[in-house]
Image (spheres, rainbow, N blue to C red):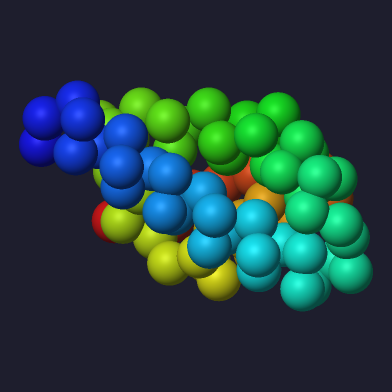
Length: 77
């Protein structure tokens, strides 16, 4: 995948995941975006080679909440 395609994909995945995080945690968009983009999970999502972009927005939101509770493990893709 070329860099521009991946950036477009990342934008959509981030928007959908932030929406799920807002729904699950009852947070505002600003808080959800700030916390998600500051997470270890997001640092993996930003790197195409990790394949984290293949996870659904719901799975990413659940993994984000697991990371916040001190448990962080990526499932196999």
